Image 1 (cartoon, rainbow, N blue to C red):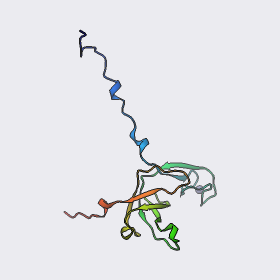
Image 2 (cartoon, rainbow, N blue to C red):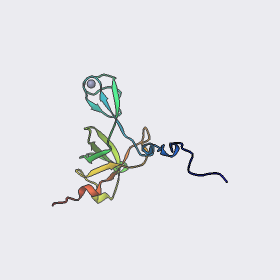
Image 3 (cartoon, rainbow, N blue to C red):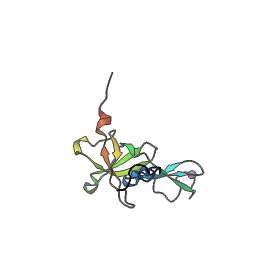
Image 4 (cartoon, rainbow, N blue to C red):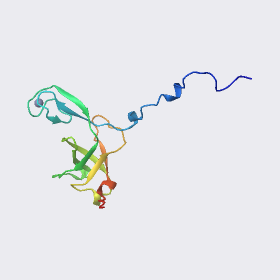
Length: 132
Ligand SMILES: [Zn+2]
């Protein structure tokens, strides 16, 4: 028989929690180091032409913006005005009648693949106004 529960060692191994944020989708935008202009997937700063664009992590929250001239093949693509002030064309995952400009959306959990459109979902809870 071995004695149990009296090793005296700190219980450190189980305290190492995995960083689960790696499983969540992350959307990076760019901020110009020279003039602070915010851009998305640009090679040059749209304002000053600098190539010194620093990646920053977006909160993934935004509002669907107005679109025009959309082909049927792009019917689920909408420009989304993100909280940080840049606009991304996203695939909006939601019922077509509910997807319209002004609706709040949030980045879906699907991984953001470079070259593919990010996927956003409707923020249903955000559309409910609670008055006290
Ligand atoms: Zn700039």
